[in-house]
Image 1 (tube, rainbow, N blue to C red):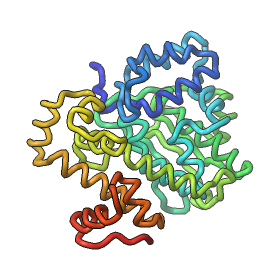
Image 2 (tube, helix red, strand yellow):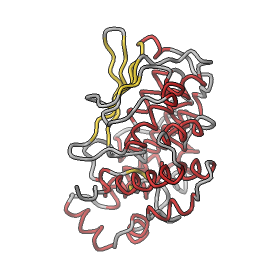
Image 3 (cartoon, one colour):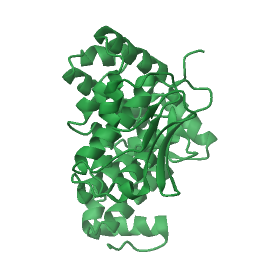
Image 4 (cartoon, rainbow, N blue to C red):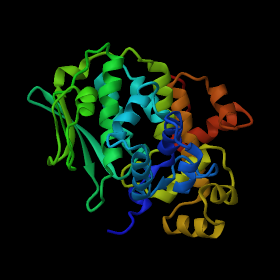
Amino acid sequence: MGCVDAAHGISVALLRPLSQLLGRLGVDAAAFLEGLGVDDAMPPDSYVPAERVDRGLDAIAARRGDPAFALTMAREAAVRPLGMFGHLVWLSGTVRDALGRATRFWAMVTRRTKLTLEEGGGRAVVRQHPAPGVPRGRILTEFPFASLALRGREATGGRFALRAVRFAHAGEATPAYADVFRAPVAFGAAFDEVELDAAQLDLPLASADPITSAALEANIARLVPAPGADPLVDRVRRALGQGAASLPDVARRIGTSSRTLRRHLEREGLTLRGLVDDVRRARADELLAAGTAVKEVAFALGFSEPSAFSRAYKRWTGRAPRSS
């Protein structure tokens, strides 16, 4: 099968903290990123073809002689959450909250699979659904479930437990798998999934920090495209939210030309001015909902005075701005 397109890839938002984790395991982190074509200029919402990442990790595992390298990585990741996504998940209040955020923002780390949480009959199943026709890498399939098992136990004082672990790829349930998952592990299954008692979902997490997690969620929501969203337009919105102001500035940040960007917006029936207004309105609503004073919101959005912001907000929404 040919190389998978980056549309089904792994995000730079995951690869950078993953390279740091590999560095703690004695791997040359800079060389790992260089081999994937990731440089300092790439935004976190860029995606690298998943097969390229798989090959890089498989090569590392082979050099180390570690057939359970995904579990080795997960043990190291249990020391601290992996990037913004890991912090968002494990600063949640309960296991249910953590898994809910993981499924909602899974596209932040990969577009190769979709993560779901299903409940019924007293059990809960967390399942990875691969995109049709897209091959799955063993290491990046096993790693998140191993991380869930280890972090879940650590964050609940050892109370978190799995009932079963199933992988679609071939393999052998060596003692390393028993040590990490502490549950029966099967290979050659129909799905990649873990099963647990539904009651486990209500376990509180010792790492909970609702204020920080809410702030992270607001930031991450701007990085993850909404279902059905135009990918290029979504990147334009994020560039505007990060301070870009002109068409050339936006084009430079998203890696295209001003001419190409202008034509794309015209085809979509959009204007940069309209997108700027959308981004500012969304940010205004977020700040107002958090109780920020109208005057502070106006200055945060770059308005010279509160009255100018109030006029703009009324034009956007048909109502005057009001803090919650």
